[in-house]
Each structure stands twice: as C-alpha cells, then as structure tokens.
Length: 193
Image 1 (cartoon, rainbow, N blue to C red):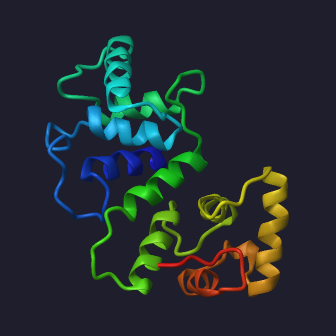
Image 2 (image 1 turned 45 degrees about the vertical axis):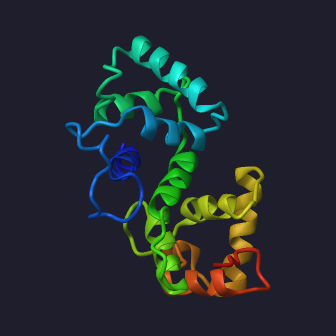
C-alpha cells in the first residue's frame, strides 16, 4: 500500500521530483485519468495505440464504476493495481520500476550525473531507509536488463555484495556505494548519462 501510494502521488505530479506542480489531470481533486493511467498501463505492458487505450480506459471505467471524465481516486487506483486477479495488477517490482521512471522523467536539461544518480537512488529507496535492500536493488537490476528468477537474483546480489564490500544484513548499498556501482564501467550496474 505504501508503494502504491508513492506511485499514485508520482502520477499526480506527472513524473518528476516531489514538489513539482501537478499535471492538469492531477489537479482534478487528486485523481488520475486517461493519460496518466495510460502511462501506468504502458509500464505494465500495454502496447496499444492512443485510440486503443481510450477504448480500454472507458471499459475499465465502466467495469470499476469510475467516472471517466475525472478519473480514479487514490483508493480506486490502489484497489485496481493490488487486485492479483485483475488486469491492472502490478507486483512490487513493476511498481518500483514505474516509480523510478516517474521520478527520473522528465529530467531537467542541466542536471549533473551525480544529481541523476541521486534521483534514481531516492526512487529505488522505497522504504526510505537510506540503503537499498536486495529487492530494491533487484528493481534497478531489471531496469539495467538483468532478468531471471528470484533465486538467480539472490546469488547475483550476494556477488555484488562481495565485489563492492556491501553488507547485505544492513541492506546495503547506501547512496555513496550506489554511485560507485553506477560509475563502475567494468560492472553490470554501470549506466551512461
């Protein structure tokens, strides 16, 4: 529920950092509508056209009793993405990836690499601990193209811990250690600007 609320609030802002002005959709009594739900749906695998999404959105509104003119409330959105039997279900990994996308998009033009890395770290740090635990790092790994089972990821995470001197019992890396991972051109976690 906490992660879903973070995603909803990021959608209300239309992406970008906390404190930015809400989008026009988000201004309608804290609701998200056609365009913002489309962004979420695309992150969860929807690949149709805008016209396809418009039809899908209207069908979802009819099915769930939402007013298509003003969109969904936070509670309605939470119910929709948390229903494992429904078409809108998003697991925590997908929600974290969406949160990262929303937190880093759009990027200001003159942002430094350090600022971008900090934004990514903050978006991944879902629980706000100042560290990235194994599941939060798995979200980053998937964004970097690392896929596989949870068991494979556990092994990979422990290899990273040994390579970078992280303490998994502490939930590392912290922000400084994360920067080293992202800046290490020889490692699998390197990202270009």
